[in-house]
View (tube, helix red, strand yellow):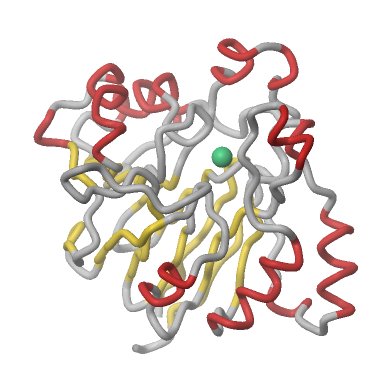
Length: 262
Ligand SMILES: [Zn+2]
């Protein structure tokens, strides 16, 4: 038996570590969004770790091109300490990854068929509807979620998404732990050019529909314009009698997931 630990890095960023390897989803450890788009997008929470401090990373999984998910500063920092790491991302992210310093042979375009990341670690991409599911002319997804299997434990990181039947159909029957974004889309966010994600009710209902065992709410803590209070979700979850499926992780916090004999 060995455990997999999950550390929240804020926004949609997570670090997964096990004896098998160390993996990152969408690390956002700079302030590049405020630098590009103004003070409204200052971080609400300090960076829990400097990218250069994160060692022994095997692979990073990037869901889409937006700066709070595909952050050139964070990625170049990570590359300094982990020069051989592999990065998976939609094809549209390629220029940003090259700018961050990745070589072409380190980059794997996110594909919908299963690939081996390393021994006992498998990944495949699923569509993300941000707002719609978009593909390039060649059929490559612009925004993805990932199914990552580590030592038989199945994780689903949805990226930025709405609920969508095409996604539901692409997901495995059994998901041990999901990461889902809860900053609902709404009129005022649209007006500010912010594409929101699942509403709280959509998240709770989708988790039930998909039979997800446990989930971590994400994309609620980084920007004032885009924030959600945990109490809001907890209140609804209690009313809907699904509160035991929620696992809150605040930025920097670590949880351990037991890996039973599978
Ligand atoms: Zn986002």
